[in-house]
Image (tube, rainbow, N blue to C red; front, side, top):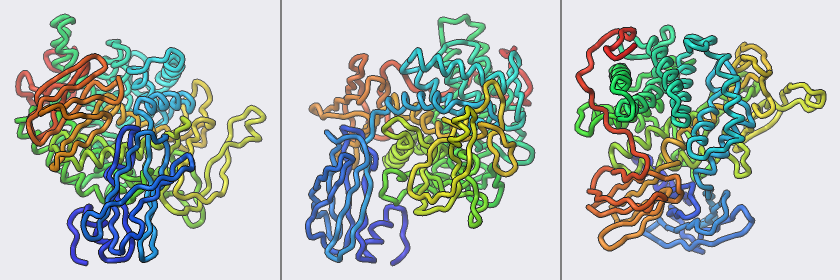
Length: 616
């Protein structure tokens, strides 16, 4: 076997160099009206030329496999009429070898967002030293924005008003705990922006602005955000959180309904923050992949530092005008990072539960209080997908929009599908999936005897786990009311009731809300085929008619190989436009993507604590 160039060459090479059949799918997670192409690579013939598919209801389907070229067979799996759940596909060749893959038929994205809101209430958010303990407020406010529910929203609002005053001072908004944990402040900033989208309360946007100013105190002259001597620019993406604020600030600045002086105020703030973001992006470009991160400054090539860097660079590129030289530079920097980072994605495993999940290894002891064993004293294991796997999804979707390369969309959708399955179809949210075939560990479980006495307590139980979901613990391992607690007990952390970081799983639903809940994607491939996600499309003469899968969809991304008239049947009515070939173009209903940022005047360099003319 000679050198292989690209992940796509690996599966055919394995089949050609062995007698093993190797399976691949164009998408591993499908909506009820979607289809996927299944490919079997096998040097040994397939006597039955069928793919056997076992569904969640116990039924069996046989899909015909059509020879494509020597050693390659193809089938089409249509999810229409299929019940939601896991489908296991198997094939056997003449040499007697059998291969297996897993596909998943999902529920609508709106179901997952609403289930995540309920999970955020049922596994209560905590006033912890770590944002990971209260990350579920993202799911709460995303669901509230699109699917108001007076009971659940009220329950979560009361929880927010219990948690927030334990973490930040009223009035000033300054932190009461972990003053130098940058990602806490940027995460709370993002939550206030998400909250503002629901409430339209200017006080929420003002608090987001104050938190952004707090984050900027950690920015140094080189553009990076530092905690001590460690670069935190790509630890839960502080710059991306500021980008989310800038979009809200610019929308406020363009709102003709508010007084001109208020519009000037928000415009000035947005420009100040954009200048800081430019410096942060230049810093990331200059590092050229040599990123530091929390807890592992130089000892490893770490998933999060790379995925968060690509996410921030690509999202900032989208905020710039298409003819901006910086847009192209930041796009290429993000591309270089994600091409290397493909080694940390489960890109080859034909299993919907893992496909596209990023390989993480150090969260079990912090998030769900797993205990070590003599062979693994720090309880570390692969957890993939994990909530932080969603960091990679932002960059993949953004690169598709920036380049029009459909492979990024396919990778992003497969990863989103795997992450979505952390929410069980019964509405039970799981913390993460452990892909290791077998791990000896000590899981943290509810002490039922203590619970019978009205006490909250847990205990460690010896257990062998593998290729399975690990449950949340915050549904029973709750913090005492009105009490600030430690984020975890591992590595000498305070042994505090409720200490856990498992609510970081809600990053999945934050990404879902930003990238797929209100959006659909249509991509025409070179052979004239249309890849449709969250929508269906029908040719209409020389044009195309698109029908979104859900009423909440307000934006459709369309990528074509030739110019066509495109009409979209939004729930609010038909919207039409002409789409030219090349990069994707948005057709929008009620909501529109943020406009490209065009500065009122060239931003001048100034210290982070200097005010603009418009700042108070």
